Length: 490
Image 1 (tube, helix red, strand yellow):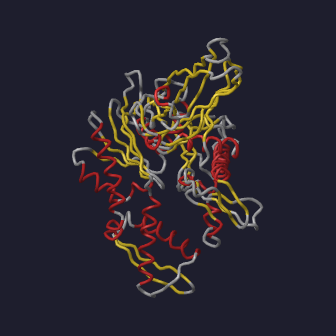
Image 2: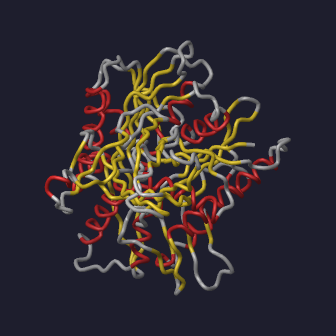
């Protein structure tokens, strides 16, 4: 069985196609829950780390031993690892631990439903729309090395939601939708066209992402709660346990304010109770700039798309906030707005895609970044080794999969390895300065004993998942070399 996994900043959800319809694989303690909290906890009193609801429950008592939002820390160079109760855990261990729990829950769900297939052959994992090559490789390696879970491919979150939407009962074909996915850590937008009479059933026209999500709304709500507590006692101190309580109250308030005009509660800090009340108007006022940042992304993406948008489809738990719907109705009154399976759409879409992964006509996505090689410009003229430039090989916006062939030459007899510095950027110029991109690592070619000026033909491919595949062949001997991308660590 192939499954789909919505690996979320706040919650993760496994799903599969059952009787040709997508369904979550949540059962037992997760049967009626939103998903599996992407929360990791460890203290020396436990034989092993706790993950999910047990970790979330313990976080109130020992908040210094909990890790949340780890997906958004993958690319944070300042957060190399986490020390929990004297033990150090790498980001890879924590991401892998969460995915291992998701896999276990999925297996329990398969057993609970008494499905014929008892094994998981692999998973398609959803990722934000603009996760980098290093982030994709990190998640794949963590899943395979730490969770024993084979990653068959990736699908971008709003694209997965579009696939789910277009496969729902009664869905219309030959329509173009704009998917707005406001999740826990990112806001992702994609414009996707469905046309099952064409050579490409689902075609991604545009996509983008901002690292803004529900956790940012929670943070501002938490600051508001603290201000209301300080109004009752000036100089009140908020330790780690108090901060954990405030975060949980903020999340609860956000959910209630999606249905109510005001939310009243209290919080106990240092043996004292502090009452507070938050109105929806207050909440929307303090978070208005966050929302507007996402709307500016929508405006920019929509202006680049020449196709008529038939529907705006909102997914992601935070899309339930009334301010989201109000903003769309104000900005785009002529486009029908739909809220579609906010908590499940991405997992459902990943599961559907997992079953169609080998079908070339199923999905046409676009490359989110450009990839270029470092070289010395006009070296023969200036003999200046500092004149580094980046020569783009693969361009942002290219249809996936996309490939390019380039030659490299041996500089001396007996050369056994070549190194090519690779940059990732959003630059679409043919040549640009290194400062305008990110050096992500080197392509390393080994296994050839070349003579001076021997030519090696290198094929670089960005596959449908956004991963880089390489092939190198020595033109003189016809031998295939060992070629791989050696990525820099965060």
